[in-house]
Image (cartoon, rainbow, N blue to C red; front, side, top):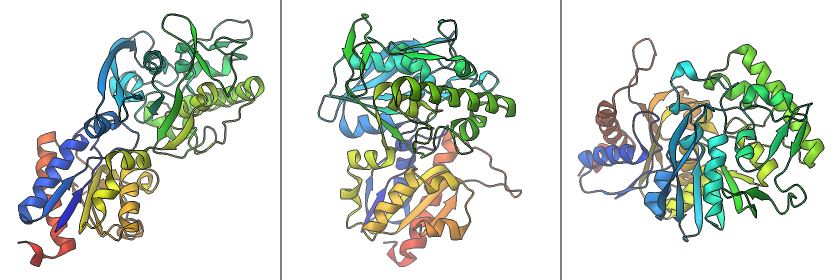
Length: 398
């Protein structure tokens, strides 16, 4: 018997590797004769770099960058030389992440992607063949303007002055000036290096776990702004600023990103990367599944156990559970899910192809109490073992 364990991280509680170890132990407790393969997963959110580094190698490289707030400097890192040895991975959350700020300091009118741009700049200076940019877990809604500024772009107001950092300044932009003005084109993107020279930019792919556009009710401001500390008036200001940015990009660069699927990811960082860096947007979970060899592990297995912190409507899209379940279904392998909290009804998660699901902790009133990492690992171990028996049957115990 073969069982594949392929969870995402349980955000703020367990990394994907810690979650996979707890599930593996739980399955081993009740099915000691089973062969259990551990394949930790990610989808372009926080922790993707760790998953890729363990699966494909590479070296973490440090970089001093601007944090989510422009007055803060912090130590970040990017993954260099994984896979073939010539690819890099930059995590937006490492420099511009929401968890880098206490709740009281979260304000997308002020937060900036400048540090993410500084990481991209440092990575590009190493001349990789390509850079993967993950955009989950950010604190920003600035359309990638901060990151582009770090790479040599200028965003000017009506008086020709550079606008300040943060989503609150997007409405003031009147012109967009590329680095190396005469050398830039969408087909041959360039950037300003750390030394100040204008260089060709490596191919950049944004790894996203959502398909939200930049503008509108499903856009970056309305959907992600409140998650990052924006109240109703701030959401409206951010929407107006992003709309202005889209107009300036279309007029000045001839690139249209407002309705592009996935452009709203990372508070518009994905759309900005398309416009300023000639990037393309790809499914994070599909790419990670390929990198870690999940299809090869699942083929011929008896069960896949996956999981994440919260199984909800967002799980129906480009998240780990949806990706793993879809892959397993294509190979005829049943799937069980353990989540910190389950907000979907049984018919809803059954429609995804999930055979059985269980949550870690739910109070009688339906509220969710986040356990400590040790408690979460213990509960995850117990739930995973029971789920495996529920799907495979108690007669498979030995």
